Structure formats: C-alpha cells, structure tokens
Image (tube, rainbow, N blue to C red; front, top):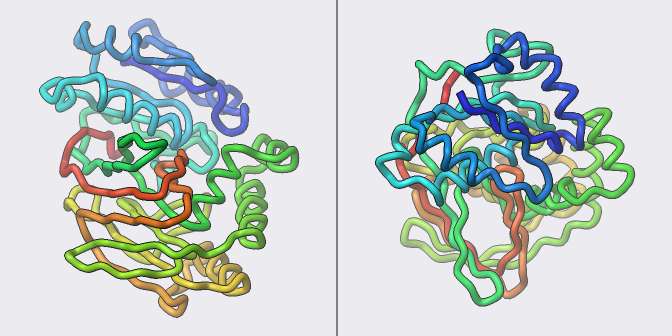
Length: 309
C-alpha cells in the first residue's frame, strides 16, 4: 500500500490528526510506503515508481485538495491500461473532507473519516474541465464537485486566508468555513455569463453554480439533489441574481437541509456544460481554484476505482 501524506492539510493541523489514527489503521507497518508532500512538492516520481513495481493501491492522507492533486497527477502519468488498475483510498485529515461525506460511524476513527477497503472499490465518473488561461487551453480533473460564483470565490479565500481565517483553520474548521462564507457574501458581486448545455444557450447573472457528482461541500453545506457517482451525468444547481440578504438565506438553507427551490434556482442534469463571461471568474474543483473567462465541463464515465468504505 502506498500512502501520500500532506502535512499542510487542515491549515497545518493534518499531522496531529494523522498521529491519532495511522497506527490503528495499520498505515505505519513495513509493507506500507509513505511519501510526504507539502507546498511545491511533487509526488510524480513516487507515483511512477510505485506503478512500475505493480503497487497500485494508493491511500491519500489529506483533504479534498490533496486527493485532487493525486487524481490530476495520475491522469497525466498513467496509461489507460494502468489507470484501470489503480485504486484510490483516503484518510480525511483535511478541513472539509467532502469526499468522505456523508460520514458513517463505521468509517470514523477519532473523528477522522477513512475509506480503505481496497477489496470493495467502485469505478467512478471523473469530471473533466477545459479552460482558457493566458491564451492557452488548460485541463483539470475532479471527483467530487465544481462550482462557479460565491462558492468558488469562498474557496479561493479559504485557500489564501487572512490572519483570522488562518487561525480558525487550525482551531475550528466549521468556524473557519462560516467566517469565509459570511465574508464573501458581503463582498461578492453577481456576474453575467453565457451558459451552453443540452443544446440550449442562455445568459444569466450567476450568484452560485454547483456542478456536482456528490451533494456535499464546504463543511455542513449540501445541495438538495442526489447525484450518482457513475451515471455519466452532473447535477447542475444554478442560483441567479440573488441580493446579499438572499445569499444569507441561501447559506442558511444549504447548511440546514432546507429546500432551496425558492432562490431563483434552475436545476438540470447534463454530461456537458460551458460557461463564458466577459470578465474573469473563479472556478473551484474539489477545493482547488483557477480563474478564467471560459470553462467547459464534461464527464468521463466510470474511469477510476475508488474505495467506497
């Protein structure tokens, strides 16, 4: 078993979480190899060497962003026949750990979620993004969800915190998420974009847009639909032209499981979506953030194996 451990997850508190669970989960024994990653550290050589030795079971110990970095690395490094043999497990020592939600007591140890049953893996869809940046066509992959609008801007702030948020990330994750969300509600401005999907084109002022394979995001927040992990489709939740007090209402509703259909919402399912704007906007994917004026999403069906418990 190969472990990729991110000591920078959870605002730098990841190693304390790891120390609470790694021995009990038998991730410190002689048959396990661990590679420590942090800022600006590449795990490419470790991944390639592991695959060349036939060691295809990877445990990603970190947050959603650590998992996303591994996904993008393995997609770029492994040939299709090798990729089909790779199985991803995870220990959630990050901040939000949306990949592990909903949490189940049978997969929690000292309040740390894990999915390590490599004999019970599911081929999951992978989200694929193409976007323009500085005149170049770039690409990224994601497993959990993507977003545009206030959620993306909030994640951008969460990844680049001020001193208050930096302190909260180390001490109380939910307080950090709440602080980041409220700050962004009062600074966010809707922006106009053209949306192409299901052979339709329309323009709208985006407040928030979720492009999701799982409904959970940013702590206790969740969308009111049940996307499937391997049906080849995204669930799309679009909220349009919301004023700040309505954004506050939306934040409350998404955090408390209240129906969100009254928020000038448009919902549909699709395997392809393109969003274009005259102004640059943030796009979040599994907690990571890029900025662009144009992004296209598509689904790659049943591409990679992931432990389901």
